[in-house]
Image (tube, rainbow, N blue to C red):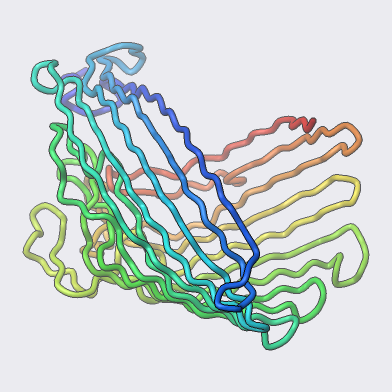
Amino acid sequence: PGCRGMEDLLTTCGNEGRLRKYYTWGIEPRVRAFDKLFGIRGETEFGFRAHFERQDRKQMNGQAPTARTGILVEDNERKNQAYSGFLQHRFLLGRWTITPGLRLEHVRYERTNRLANRGAGATGRTHLMEVIPGIGITFAPASHTTIFGGAHRGFAPPRTEDIIDNAGGTIDLDPERSWTYEVGVRSWPVSGVKLEATFFRMDFENQIVPASVAGGLGATFTNAGETLHQGVEFTGRVDMGSLLRRMPNVYVRAAYTYVPTAKFVGTRLSSIPGFGSVSVSGNRLPYAPRHLLNFQLGYTHPKGFDALLEAVHVSDQFGDDLNTVESTPDGQRGLLPAYTVWNLTVNHRLESRGVTFFIAVKNLFDRFFIADRTRGILPGPPRLVHGGVRFQF
């Protein structure tokens, strides 16, 4: 009663059928050779990759919650072709290893809206090219300890739907470009114990971040410009089987990432409609939690049985560049509260028959949490249980 139709955008009035087909194929050969360069023993690796994707996307809006057909409101074909080649050489200098490398990326985009121009269609095309250098260095002061560091250029192209609009025009959305620096140490102090600590810094010349759309009808991405991410990561693993020299093995693994800095740098105005004159320089980036924790408790038996219990904790994070805390009525802005999700996997392998029985439970305790706000409140996936049998021939 009182339902006016699809204009209400309520599931009690109708539904949306998002009909998708995805096609992906490619090839990636690599060559590795041991040789001497400038009289220094080393290893050279090079290769190329050709990757192709095609999406056939339709959306039909039904006039009732149980409708299985309706009005065709989207009919898109999206294509991209990505070609890349890389070359790196590892110089082996006793305890030192120096690895410079270079990668070339070329991406071509095409998007066709078959409904545009009264059914005549509209097609847009564009392309990107990037040269990506990097260097990594390791030093082994002792047989059980390695110190490492590196500087690498970062590049992430936008998606087809983000760089070409529905009318076939190109959007002023640059690829993500950054420099990543890291230095750390990893050690195996005793058999069965592995420890690692890393300091990292990511300087983005341009970072692409989600931006809410007024009215809650969709979501888009925007150039965030210069941003800075900086923090530390600690990981450790203890295998009781190796430590005590006996089986079965019980192991514990933990990883903690602390990101105190994740902010807009330089001049930056809000991308939220109605707040375009508000400065967000220095604000924390949306969807950038300060704390990430992963804990695993595992068990492996030599007769083929293994189990893993995992906890994943994500601290609270902002959903917009204004760092809004209270949720807005449309749900597109506000804090995403912290959450912890538990996962469980169990496998049993019959080695003589090449058969493995498995079961996995994600979100074991069916925890509700907010995963995204760009289109309004989107909950994370509920408990998912799946199992099966794998055959190895």
